[in-house]
Length: 534
Image (cartoon, rainbow, N blue to C red; front, side, top):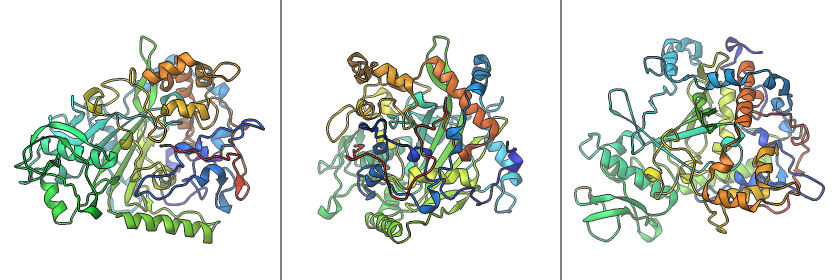
């Protein structure tokens, strides 16, 4: 097993395709006559300006020649005996330990990056040049994070519908996401921090990403110089009216200092795109079980993931990216992607974002991810039809009729009682649709608990359970206590090995019958009718 000192922080890869996840080696053929289709949740007809429209991935394994061999060997490892050897109380004690804060309330990882910079300094300048964690996860009744002195850090947490599949807690992890806009979006025209201005700009960004009206507290538009509700006058507004069609000379604007920068052309605004400088912070955590036997978010982080938008690309440039990718695949089918970046400064995707991650070391302390570990981020965030400006969660933020208008952390309110969302295209319930096409509720057909919970022995849907799901997504999202503890144990074994580059999914049994170990060139998946995620 690799020690922390043996982990390679340079840009050497042990295999050429960390960006192709283990899920993509799944064999959808369940029986001779039936297939599952977990692929559509990521690979789908996309929304502008993401022109990828990668439904072809549902039908064919279009892998480069050099990656036909499945590198995710952890998926075939039998850990059942090792899982059974870990005591329930021991794993509960472990996941309840806080590996983000120390006893003084200071951020452990931030201190480690500054005090042990040389250990992770890949550019040899003596400093840590990557992201230094600065969220205190101290969220108020509006979702804003506060530092110990009470000041705003700029981070704002939001609740969202988990993407169907591995990201549902029943498959091993809880998680949360916060957004932070660049400093100008938090300032008034005089350059001073202004919370009402920041809230308005966040509402404007939400309106642009969702392409819909967003309610706001009654706001005087006159001092802002922006007609927020598009009623033709500067007066009282109670909504951000989505009305953006540049070809028809209909525009929208930010407010405060960000308006000045927008007018000067220093920052930009467009539907389905975040402004420059937008950041996301995403913690991935273990599952905890409270005294009432309810499963929820643990204190201990498995990972801390960070993203920052560094470059603006307009719609034409997004289209050029897809055209170049298509030509590359056609002209050089055996070529794998070269991902720019480093372990210290994160890895970049062509759409103008940098992604960086931190993960547990063998002792359970968070450490920077290696270059190879971070390259795995670019598969989902750089090349799937479901993404919105490389992000997935914000478009799925809970609507305004939710608790705190959707601006809250899961630690403030659980998933219990959240109604199931409906799909835009056909108004079918989203998670029910996923289960219809994937009865086990995951890509690996390994979650028999979900299958038994929602389907009878003949494979027929249990109507009462689906009715409950329509009213409360937690009946799908949260596993039983027994399964939660087993998933925690399975992942802890991977932490002990530090074998993340061979697969991070906490599996309770090997997947020899579900995953291919070898793929043929242009092999058919067995799926004949592609589905849409929207």
